[in-house]
Length: 389
Image (cartoon, rainbow, N blue to C red):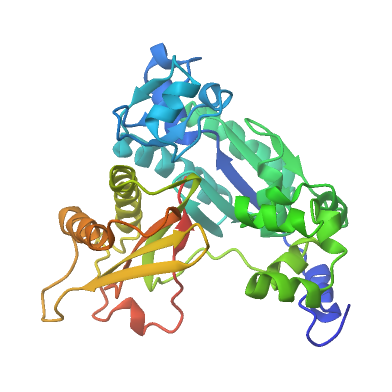
């Protein structure tokens, strides 16, 4: 440890110790399904799935009552119905979800300017210097949860810690409607006791590989040196090395001019049929276009010239297809119908697939932010490939 090639070098460790931040990760509980149960009293206490109920339908979100039966997002509706015969399907209402999300974000900004939304239902907040002068991140997290419940009649879980990685893990610790605090000095010990699947970014395939290598917990991961991790996990190794020690130096970024707006979804079960792929694409189109609308600046909607479809096969190979429209003045992808049509065309071009996929994503890029030049020309821009749901 401490060498020049060590991703958790003493210099970085000292930087984190010297500049501890107060970070909160807020994650709404079963957000889409909870909005449906809130707005329809007949659904309360029942297993609810947001999505299509037909033979080609896919679950977009599931209530906690449904999750007890094993129902998950991205699961084929026929499978969900088999697991839970009493499952109630409702169609998605993105206007309602957007309205609730805007109320929640207003609550966040009441406490801090440093808010980094990850999706409609979760965000990081840096409250090192909070607007109300409360000082305690734990107290702020509790107040935020209370305000969300009072103003939206929804529940949220929160994680409080000194970096983003730990705060996100903590928010999942006591779900639903809970809070978990990981204080300075506790991070490495907390992570040591976690199953490796709890590490953000470690999916079923990576978990399986780690278990074959004898890595089942954070402690097992921390026991492996960086050379071993790089030999087995490539570019993912540096993240794993830091995470196993509770280290994360990423700041909360509240204002990011984007090169792209998009999202991707990892499935609980690999999918290959054209029908399931098409239904899943429709869900992603809805959610990504929601993000595009939310990325508007000064009342002008973000628009772009390139749409990219990303697919990750079960062997982790990535395939992508892109379509750009002509660059003549006035030609943009700036409405949902155009965006959706191009996305569907890209998918049809690659069907049938040579093998099942575990991930699908869509991105709109070469953006115009209303300043006369595209986002690709902005040096400070960052891609916005965020997980869905």
